Length: 364
Image (cartoon, rainbow, N blue to C red):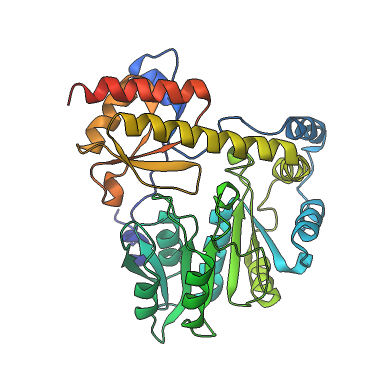
């Protein structure tokens, strides 16, 4: 029997996550594998998270608290906003999907960079909207190109800052100039998954002055700097009207009990967050120095990852490094055929990556 598929769904290209550690170890019969492909925190998460989660395990026979009062209150205090301005999600991906379903009618348009996080496109299409792609300008978001694509059908614009996968950023003046050209009824979604790693004060940060512009929706995640990728919890801060729509349509228990508890504990441990950020910056400086000495071009970054041009088939290099137990990300699917994306690891992991890369490049 041939089932009829929603035509919007049929055109979707499936998201490909990074290769799991255990899968690679099993496939290549390796005792040890390191993963520097998914921009995770190599230090893990705060010990306070461990303690809080262990205590919460005793209540897992109960449904989660739908309103997530403890987490909402922590975020409300941290950013000086009302709990009514906050939407929690099963990762920020969840909130992206809610925005698309809440504000796109069939045929409405959502603008986004090309390439960018595939969940933007997937979410737009599942909401029967039309994704409009604007190619990057020299590895950076083409803000003027986005403005030029705005039509009467435009409802959402997705901005990623810092940008994944290139690590580029948008500074304050650039964003303000861009926002002035965007119509008053278009929502600007600013995805700041990596904002904690930014070193420059010139980079636009939507939550330095939250809610100053009702069009701006700020998205954040606990998956990166806080090390809670497996817990799946993200949040958005936005105008009350927008938040009201998203909270109306989200699943009532979209953030599980352990994720709520873990996120609150993570927010309370500033020292671990600062340790993670410091470790990331030290790793970036070390890796850049070593790669430069190898004659490899590396793109500047304000995140916990970077792209390097190996001047060769990136997919082939990626596969060869897998066999050595080092998982990185080939950028071929993003249109950067000779680039790898690598996130920072521990000192041992960084050394193992460099050793594997040298070994593989000798064979090219």
